[in-house]
Image (cartoon, rainbow, N blue to C red; front, side, top):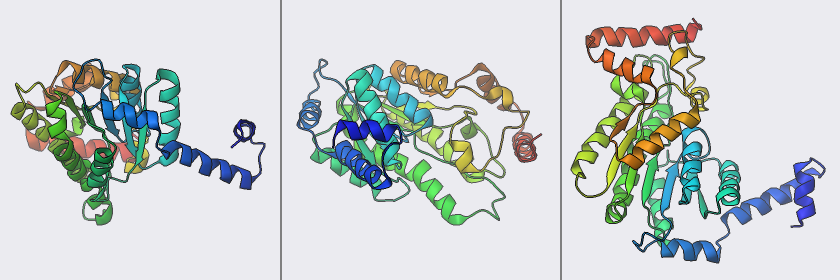
Length: 312
C-alpha cells in the first residue's frame, strides 16, 4: 500500500473503495506477526533486569486503561493491549510504538465471552510472551430498578467485571509471581457502598476490592504486589454505556481528570500499595461513610441516583 494513498486517506481524498482497501491494510499490518516482536517477547521470558518488562492491560482502548497503557510505555514496558475496539487498539499501538519505541501487541477480545481469557492466554503462550504486570481494567456498569433491568446486560457485566478478572488472574498469576511482578485491579469507590438502582455494578466492584485485598495478603512476602485502584467519578465512556446520565450537583466536585487518576493508580502499583483512592474528597467520603449507619448510607446513595437522573 503506497504511502501516498495513506496520506490521501487522512485528508479525505480517496474513494470509498480505496478507503476500504486501506482499512484492511491497516488491520493486516496491525496483526501481522513481526520477527522483531516475536524475538523481543521470547526474550522477556528471561528474568534479567536488563530486559524490558511486559504488561497486559484490559479495557485499553479508552479511559483509564488507555492512560495506564501510555504510562507503561513511557517507562519502557512492552505491552499487550486488550479491548473490543480493534481500530482504537491499532491507533494506540501505533502511537505508543512511535513515541516510546516499545513493542505493542493488540488483542481484540470481548471479555463478556467466557472463552476470551483462555483464548488470550493460549495466544500469548504460543507467542512466548510472559507477563510481569496484569492490569484488570475492563468493566462496565448499568443502572435502573433491578426489577426492570435487562438480565443479559447484567450477566455480561458480571462476566466482565468479576469472572473475566478472576479468570485472567488465575491464568497469568503464576508467571507474574515467578517474575515478582505486579497485579493492578481497577475497582471503584462504589465498592465501599451499597448501590440502589446500580446494585449489580456496585456489588461487582465490592467483589473486586475484597478479592484484591485478600489476594494481596496471600502473596505477602513473595515479592509480588496486588493493588486495587478505586476511583470516584471520572469522565470517560463509562457513563455513556452505563446509561447513568449526567452528574448530579452532589458529585460534581468529586470528578477527576482521567490522566490524574491513572497516574495515581500507576504510582500506587509501583509502590506496592494495596488500595488507592484518588482525590482527597473521595478518600474523605469513603472514610466518613464508614461511620454512618448502613441503612442511612444506602438511602443516601439511592437519593443521589434519583438526583442524577433528574439532573439536580
